[in-house]
Length: 311
Ligand SMILES: Nc1ncnc2c1ncn2[C@@H]1O[C@H](COP(=O)(O)OP(=O)(O)O)[C@@H](O)[C@H]1O
Ligand SMILES: [Mg+2]
Image 1 (cartoon, protein in one colour):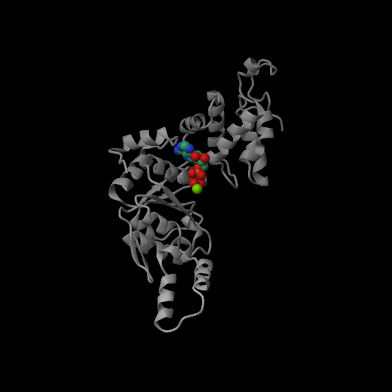
Image 2 (cartoon, rainbow, N blue to C red):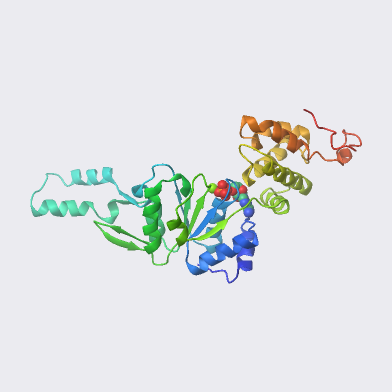
């Protein structure tokens, strides 16, 4: 895969595929690529953890293999499974059940690669070089973490019936956590760690403009500034970049080019995801109401920020 030669070069390449990384994140990702170390990204939901893995796969020209974690996920969902229905069909096709040596041969023929269903981790090892995204590891439980340690130590998987599959080139592994629980030290030690914070308003406005063609720069900044205030407010669910993007798209659909109280009301559900948050979100979004709205007509001189502050 084409390797970046500096964090700055990686920053540019990521920007080209629409991902804006700050210096710290670009440096961490650069080192993960160069040192062949897994990258462990932690941060609030919606700060761009999953999106970074997707962007890295595009930049490196390597397929992205994604393993979404959940409570109760186990090794067979991550590694491989035997295709039982197919094994059965094949067995039937062989006709009368043989015995002795013939039976052993039949059994052996059912445990070959063609009857194996590769799950994400095995897929990533077989399709080297790949980017392996182990998403939301905090949702999985302890045993699964222990299993991942083994994989990350050897980049290989042993299948008793088939032997060991080793990646020709180790995949770039990106692990993410929304921090609903602490991930164990043993896993952290193997990784390069980076905490992704919410972007500052200037970067967030830039992300919005890159993602949404034709977005009014003033609206982009209104939204970014409102989001920064909302993240400081005491919300059940502070908004991430995903919510900013949704609000900007809503504005486009509603034909609004500024963050007006009317837009705040109509698009409240793009940002407030809990009933308890609605009042605060409504208030903070409406606070961005343009003071120079005279140009849009209708609101008069708009000399007070309270112009449209409905309650
Ligand atoms: N730095 C960034 N540059 C470009 N897009 C971003 C950035 N951060 C977040 N996004 C966008 O915000 C949305 C949410 O990001 P996502 O990766 O799903 O968050 P997370 O995985 O951290 O919960 C996605 O649409 C993503 O493309
Ligand atoms: Mg994610």
